[in-house]
Image (tube, rainbow, N blue to C red):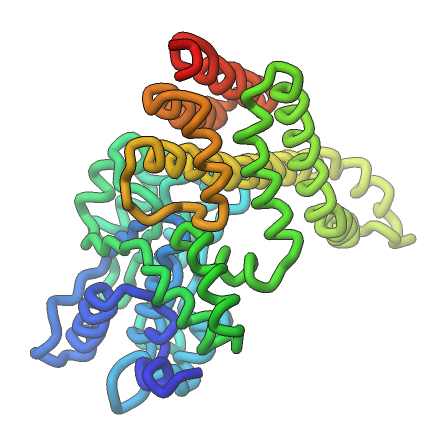
Length: 409
């Protein structure tokens, strides 16, 4: 780790967010009573594109608020900082939804916790990741705490958007907004070199094709399966053109996503079910055990419903990553077609982008990008993955046939 990163304490984990870092440092100083810091507020909203570090910024801020060092808040070395960053601090709670939404029931439990005074730390800190998944009821439950926060409670919301359709406008308006930006290729590469010890050239290549996502850059640099997944996504750009390959490619993609999701969660599902049965007396021989298990059908059904929601979310996330890569490929082709010198999303796929540009017009490439975006929207509206992908490849194929094709005059 570089000396500069070490000196920044917990904020050394933030990549390319200098203005946000300074604002959070100032607010943490204000929370300590230092008049030189900017005003401290009890509700914050961290937004930014995937990979920008929304949740990292929120967690760093939580550590700075709890920090017991006499120096700058967020030293990264005191017990409060290390336990906060490690996820074990008693007064810092992270809500990380693994399903499609954050329910009102779950949020009410958090609201009860938020109403308590801190036990060991300076503040009771609640970090809600993917706050755009709050249901209307959950957002209303949280709003009560945000509007009338207890003295020593701080709410930190993280979301990829501030669109009124994605988040409660009232809830958003009660928060101090911290917008994060996409980190530069150079800053991402430096992180991979400093923290992961990667070869500079390998780090630079991974950073350049990561789409500004630090975590993905690390996976692309170190995990061959991640690189294979990306290549599979980009092959869809060519496969979607031909009628004989388009629908088969879409079908194979869905099968691959479903297989990956099943394999990833198989062990966890078995563990969750076994733990539930044990908690209900499974394996016991005492009187009443059989009756308890017979009456547990509702709890098992609830668990299965949560697991199904988690699987759906995982499949959508995997598909979304593919669609983002695909949109980037058509965007590169469009830039090539128009003679733009803008930085490519996939600089290692310049030849493929040029081939796409040669086979249709700029208008056709725009149609392709629109088809990808419409597919993302359809999936958000619960359209089956296969149907959404079939519609997408049909639109892409049409974009490469007359009247859009250059060869068609």
